[in-house]
Length: 133
Image 1 (cartoon, rainbow, N blue to C red):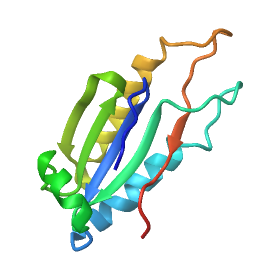
Image 2: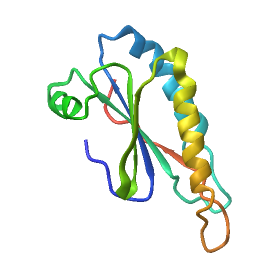
Image 3: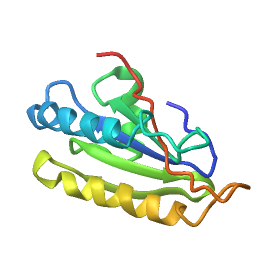
Image 4: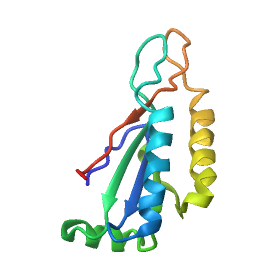
């Protein structure tokens, strides 16, 4: 998994296929991604500031990076912000979904002060889910 170094925020959900909590969390994660995601557009149609992705722990090619990131409790959220790198990480169960929502809203509020030449706020969130299910 490759994360670009931009000013965008990136939210990665780490999960395991055998984890029942992950299965329950998945629907909520996707709902949040679609709520704030690529269907929401600004007047100037610019790309968003937050990208959503996921990484499956029990795929052999992902296990080492998950262990390096200490993402071994599921579901696990890791948030990145451009050149700052990792800015947050936490286990997020379905009952604690507001942790994710609050973190996203906080990032959007921080980005609200960044505007383009026309003075329009860049508030679109890109939905880019990695991997096939």
